[in-house]
Image 1 (cartoon, each protein chain N blue to C red):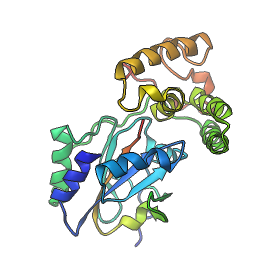
Image 2 (image 1 turned 90 degrees about the vertical axis):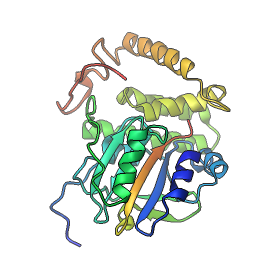
Image 3 (image 1 turned 180 degrees about the vertical axis):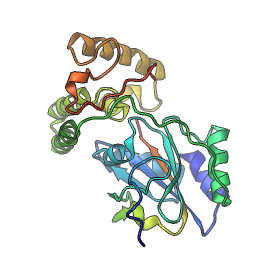
Length: 219
Length: 47
């Protein structure tokens, strides 16, 4: 966030705008300290219900998407988009100058949920948010986990459950080694529970439409 | 502006989805209201 603020300050132009979108199941207050600490002067939108995740088609952040003046997408990088990656920064700089940003990395998803599952995921995220807002955190987490088990590769959901249940692993600093171990533990539990198989998640039978496309590897 | 022939989605060549979200500073902002300028949408999480 501080890095993008610096970028914004040094690339001021009447024809360029930066908008940040914070994915926060627990509401805007989770994002606010980071925005304030960075002194961000660009707008930050808060996505409490993973709407953008659904409509843009991503299951992880950080992401960068470049829009032209007519609202069309000219570049999209889902996962790992960073101010510290010169390729990412250069793509944005080229675009600001009116040039083509360059090729986008593959945005292929491991699977697509059917409409019914997608609706269920959204409903459970909303219900969890509501329960959390009235202090019923345990029940909220149960709803978020139910949403995750419908969409097990969705790191936007999984990591927010972690942040709610294990805040000490996220604040003041993020413990990435713990995340790796926790993911391994949860994957084992999900395999034991029949949510995931050895080839990935979710099992094809859990998708109401046969659009599942499993890809090699697992990030 | 007529752009209805374009697919809506998150891939290159798509028209940006028509989503309106609350701003941290108050009010709402629709992604299609950003038209007329080149825009970087940066998605992140505090977690």
